[in-house]
Length: 275
Image (cartoon, rainbow, N blue to C red):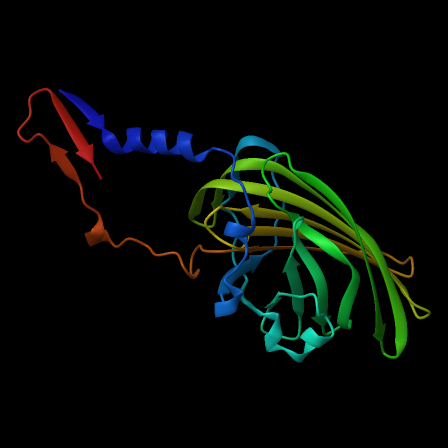
């Protein structure tokens, strides 16, 4: 008697369909900030960002959460800081004292300002193109940025550049969750903050993994290097992801919800098992 697995055939067909190159744009990447959308992420360190290329299977099963964090998106008008950053449309905040201000232009998603515990309120004189729209496999961009702000009564001048490259797509497996179609976007941001007190050079590499169904990276790998006054570099590697054990928004199927059907029954030749 032959045994045919309809689930396996369906999964194979689904995988071949979903491995098409994702396209990220304003329609699927901008959070519903007017309603105050929130994302819960898990945090950990990481070791290897994986290869670039097409149809890659990115394996991050070994990420073990050490803490959680909430990111909330709001209309920029909810805070008085908006008057200092008038071009901002919406903001993201980690629930603490750090907020980033954004707008969407014909180029894509641009960061136009920030309000952080270290720097205070900063209105960018040249916005930072954080993600080019539309973005699909092979998309690249480069954009200068600049800002002037004051810390402790001392004026600071910022100059820098961001470069971006959507360098991979495929399947992402992270902490017991599998995303069948992701686009990986690698950005490198290099900035110099100069004042009479100190010169701070910072280089940030970020690998964001996007899907067309979640308006926030489902996985973010960050590598930050900071050098103060030409001293020894301080290097920090951190990761954030949605879902997994204890994650928010991912619902498990209980045992009694799983259904197995074999047909026809009785059978003498071919039996199809569906799940």
